[in-house]
Length: 273
Image 1 (spheres, rainbow, N blue to C red):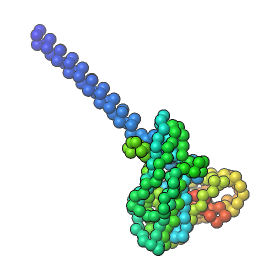
Image 2 (image 1 turned 90 degrees about the horizontal axis):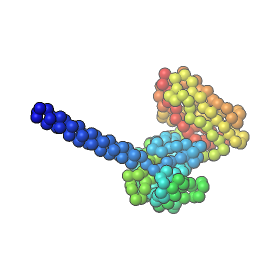
Image 3 (image 1 turned 60 degrees about the horizontal axis):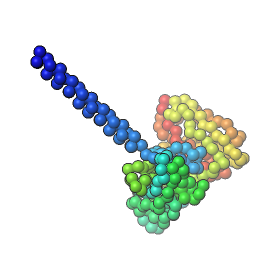
Image 4 (image 1 turned 90 degrees about the vertical axis):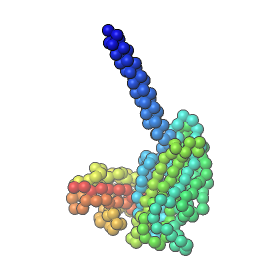
């Protein structure tokens, strides 16, 4: 009897403490998960306010071209945040004057367009639930990239973080592909075109488009090395374009909307038969 008494007592105590430990660990893990999510969201002002939080964009352009990107930064927290923006040169070809790439970063204030390893812009206070918008109030994110004559890929990371808590951050990465052919971009808000679907595509990829004004428009399809594969003339202001991908090899492609001989945007298409 004594043996069973102490055995049952020991088993109960073991179960009680194991349950408490499990509960404590569970609460701790939930705390980590909850706090691993950032309080910021990045929206692409120039392409339908798509969510580009923690994404990578590939942009194709030629020597002498330039490309502009503007992001709206939203504060999802219930309190105001003092937000900083840092630009980091990740990889690519280092260049020197006079053939030097320039990256002009604006975040409340505009920095000199130099190609330093790391460059941090000013502070922007964003109220709870509010946004910092370059188009709206001129204090949001705006960056202009102008490549040198040297062909290659430059990768740049833009990090937005809470000045009081640097771990509360989001990133936006751009791979600038500088090719001899060039795919110059100029952003025009009056011309919208969708992401291709399905993507990856097996036999047909569909792209929807909607233009608020009339213009000479077409869509060009490029392969991964920047060579033109197909060109489609767009006759009407809204509709959809079906691309027959049966004729294409498996791999990565880019398609650009051309308006009056200028690229208004470039998106990615993957072909997988």
